Image (tube, rainbow, N blue to C red):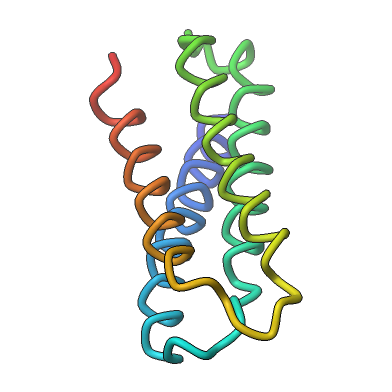
Length: 115
């Protein structure tokens, strides 16, 4: 079971890295570019692996802070909602990539500093 938990943590971190990378991809594409679909892929990977980690918690004797996980999930849903709402627009709003990566950084900060 430890291998499964570590694999899920690994994939969860890759999802976070994907979200940060999408910020750089979006900036490189230019101001007139549409929103990259990778934002939704990163959110999906984070959400699936986060829920799976929470689901296997009783099997791994993990004790999670439910308030922290709820807030982190809410931030992730906001990221996904903003990305989904702007995905089909021909041009992403100029404020969107900075807002999305800012929310990703907030989520990482919650994960690391909220004990």
